[in-house]
Figure: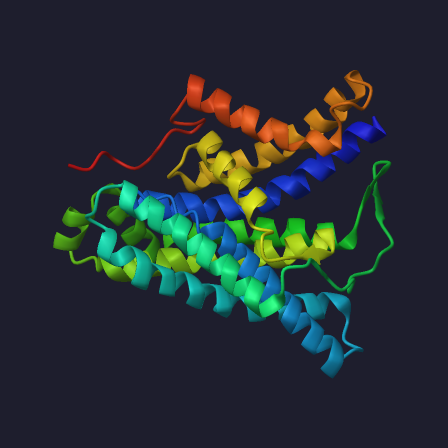
Length: 309
C-alpha cells in the first residue's frame, strides 16, 4: 500500500508539470490552430534563467529562506519567458497565420532549434547543477515520502491551473480568448482585438512554462539547453490525451499521463522483474499517444475549437 501511495504522489508531481506545459500547447492551438513546438524550449529558457537568477540571489542574499529564493527565481524567469514567447509570435508566427499549416509547423521546429542553440551559446552544452535551496528532509504522507520541493510544485501547479480557469471563464480577456477560439473573424466584428488576444495567450503560456521549467529543474536538480525536448513531447501527448484545444482536457491529460507513467513504470517493472522499470517509463507516454490517436483522436474531453471556414 505504501508503494502504491508513493507512486500516486510521484505521478501527481510529474503530471502537474506535464499539465502546466500542456496548457501552453493547448491554449495556442485553441486560438491559432497551431502546434507551437518551440513552447518546450521556452520552458528550458525559464529553467536556465531561473538558475542564473537563483545563483545571483545565493551570492547577494545567501541567508534568505529557500522558498523565498525559489519564488524570486520563478518571478524573475516569468518576464524573460514572456518576452521570448511574445517575440516568437511577433517575428515567426504572425505573418504565417494564413499560410498553409505546414509552414508554421516547420517554423516552430526552426525556432525550437534556434532557442536551443542560443541557450547552448549562453549557458554551455553540459548539464548545470541546480542549487538545493529547499530543505532536503522528506515529508511522510501515509507511509510515502514527498520532498518540500515537490509540495511547492504541487501547490504552484494547483494555484496556476485554478487561476487560469478563473481567468478564462470569468474575465474579459478570457471571454475574448474563447470568442477568438470559436471564430476569429466574427470575434473581430464584435470588437475583439485578435492580435492582443493572441499575444496574451502566448504570454500566459510562457508564464506557465516558466513555473514548470524552474520547478522541473529544482525537482531534478539539473538544467541544460536540451532539457525541454522530452517533457515537451510528453506534454503534447498529454494535451492530445485530454483533448487539444481544451484547457481542462490539458490539465486532466497531464495528470493522467503522470499517473500512467508512474504506475506503469512501477507495476510493469515489477511484473518484468525490473526489465521494464523506471528507465523505460517514457514508453508509456508514447503508447498512450498512439492509442488515443487510434481510438479517440479528439481526446478524452474532445476539442472545443470549431471548424473554421
